[in-house]
Length: 176
Image (cartoon, rainbow, N blue to C red):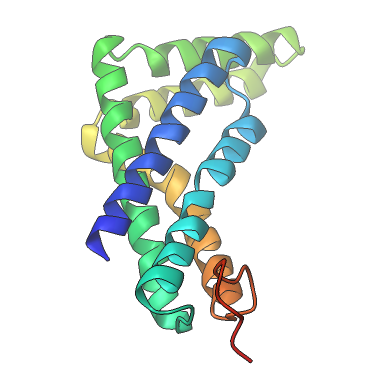
């Protein structure tokens, strides 16, 4: 089970990381695109549970076992994502948040936000910048970007794959 968790977790993490880097280079900071990439990459949770169900357990898996396996894969993917994000931050001299704050404030200014509303936003962004400079805060935030998506995928995958007729193993008849 550990091999499946690490294999599928690291594959999922790598796909997320590559997808995010490409998305950032192409479109900047698209929230929806980021979560779509995470969802696609975390389909490795479904694949990992299915492989374990079909190859190790003979085509039948209990919800709890499937959920724990899915959570393991999601945690491995999330940790890989955090570690690579930290490496990316170090390689770019921790300029991400400065650029993000500058971009956000410029976009709000261009949209016509001014006066007290702009000052409030600028103060909030400065607090965010200060918090993000703390590695423990930053790693926690980064983990929480991806893990809830992995949790939802693990729950859905466990619920679906506990039914042996859902995506049955090839060459094996589905259990009645």
